[in-house]
View 1: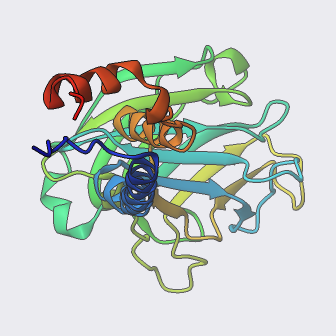
View 2: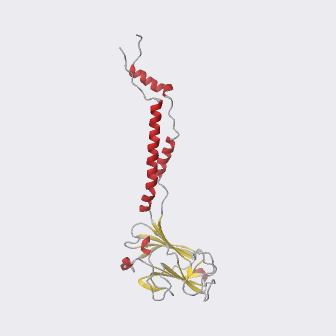
View 3: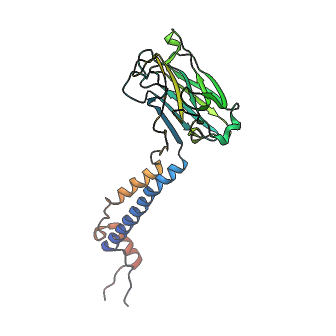
Length: 273
C-alpha cells in the first residue's frame, strides 16, 4: 500500500512567504509614517511666536542690529490653558521693557478681567510686572489699542528692571483659551502705524533715532504652528521589527532535524516492499 506523507513547507515556499511579509510590513510602515504627521498635528499643541523687530513710534530703537529684540511665545497647555513667555534675547546694556501689550480674540472679550495669570517663573532679578486686562483699554504710542498689558518697574535700579537676558513666564487660564486666542491685531486708531499683534515700550535705547526710548512691534505678523512630537515608541518599535524582517533568513529545511523528525512521526516508519 502506498503511504501518503505530510508535505512540509519547502525553502521556496518559506522564501516567498518571508518576502510577502516583508513587502506587507513595508507598506504598513510607510502608511504609518505618512499618517503620523497629520495625526500628530491634529493633537499636538499650538504655538504662537511673535518677535519685535521694528521701532514704529519715531523714537529711538534698541541698539542691537540682531533681531528680534524681544519675543513673546504662547503655547497650548491643555484645555482652557496656555503658557505665556516673554524674553529679551537682543536687548543690550541698560535697555529695558517698561510696557508690553498684546491682544485677545474679540469673541472672548467677556473673559477679560477674569483671566488668571499663575505659576510665575522668572529668569533675572526684576520685579514682577503689574498685569491689567480690558477690551481695547491700552494704547500704544503710534499704534492702536490692546487688551492685555504688563507694566514693569523702571528707574535707576537696573536690577529691578526687565532687561537684557531676563525672561518671565505665566500659566494663563480662562474658558476657551488656546494659543490661537492671542493671534489677533490691535484695534486700529486713525493715523496709527499698526495694527500689530504686540507692542512694547523700551527704555534707555541707544540705536537708530533719538529720545532714549521707543515703541517696538513685529512686522511679520507672528508665527503660529503646531508642534509635531517625535514618533511614538510604538511606531519606533514597529519599524525596528520591520527592519529585522529584512535580515532574517530561514534555515534550510533539508538539514532541519526537528522538521525531519516531525515528518517521520506523522508518516510512520517506512517498510520494505
